Length: 318
Image (cartoon, rainbow, N blue to C red; front, side):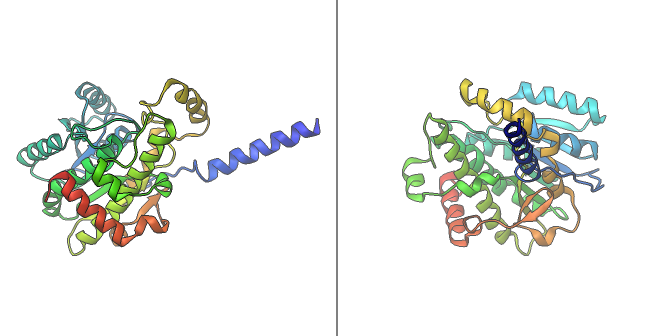
């Protein structure tokens, strides 16, 4: 009997430790209004993106739902309008897996929208495969598509009184690395049909997100635009929808027990989007609505600068 009680005690202790650390959550408590402001949320049709878009719509923002799947986006828009009473949530087609589609979205947006106050680079995936341009899909969608989108919209952000760029990273950046020779030669940072292979590629893409934010902040110095990267927590979303059935069979019970819901996962994004007075923290990485120190690889000036320059070439900016 005693061994069982000890084992149960250990399980409970481990559970509490996980909930207080890796699976920790927070609540954004600011009351900033967004009336008259325009926001783009990539991947806003589900998960964290949808929860973020809903709260921004509730606060009065004009929300542009930049999504690949029109049917899912329109269903999400109907939900958001019904829950918030907003009539200013609109769909614009954006496929981050196609550089031409990113350019088309940007051209359409700049022609039809007079302002941009907030860009939330939220969309992401865990999958194997290639983009329309031949890049590894995780690098291409999670980083390169968002890199190009941000660069094309920066001038419009600068026209406002305090634009912000919020990019969803992940604590997974800690396990990432960037092999520039492989990237330039093979157009990916990892690929393969096994889970460990595309999870490693995901970690690499999240390191790209953190380094992109680090370098972007340097390039925005002296402007009225700031930027932040976010670890939303470990959230139960559709991120793993491309995983195999047996992988989902393993993940699902853990997710039900420990993972955060999308609303909880959106809180740090909302903090970086709305919290007043965080402008001096531009370029920082946030978790649980607070800035966090990153490991050395997440703030390596030389690697961040090289990633930016390589991304410019790969995306066709220069």
